[in-house]
Image (cartoon, rainbow, N blue to C red; front, side, top):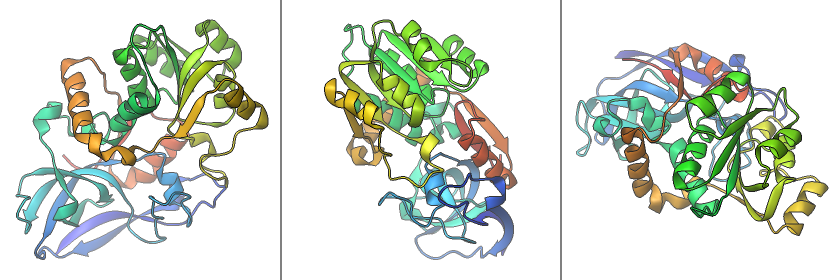
Length: 348
């Protein structure tokens, strides 16, 4: 038997409540070391915390593709680990593997069919990148921009990204620039984040929504209007951006983090004035769900790897140590404490 630490859902925050570290609980269990045919015994290296998980804390997630977490049950999400032992023909001891349903445990027994083998060389050994830039956030940014952004190189387009210093937004801005946007403007929540976007990630400019008048700042930084808006936050920030969008523009509706602690449908309804602008200016605003494009994952991951290895796309991470800090890390993501992808390192 192996002694294992895991994170369970201690309590639900309520549909309108803010998720806090106390909603999570760490406990110890024992796992058998003799595994069944088809199973794999893994050691966890890195775990991911992501805004969508707030929906899983409710009994009704509001999305048919998301199952709710169970109170007192072990939580799960994106993870990377190494195989300690295997009774699955395609997975060998020592393999580096990942899954979207990785248990929040220091060690776990998982179905080998649900694991994907990874090549560490693709990320120069930075295995946590498989949870961010070369994982689901990277694919969300890439496919969101390419499927819903309608960027045409040389056409002098301006893109605005909200939540621009987060896991997805920090990549989306760089991808927009690589794909041909002439101006990329980020909206985030601190001067430090603004500085990072412009000095390290190649954003044209950045706006701190906590201290700036967003409408005035956008008029300054986007004198020709906004053609594409990569929306990660929703709410009043999105209303301000949409108000300055050009005719036939495009909203990439990726996330609505400002609304996740509220009991509203997803995507949340817009106010009447913003809806009128969308209709009058013929602006597309279609919900973007990356799992609808799984046929493009392989090519997308290859493109992301190439950009990262060539240094054309910079990866930012905020790393917290220890499984006991999963709740703290999640609260940080929901309150804007991270720059880039929030990672929890579980073991070496």
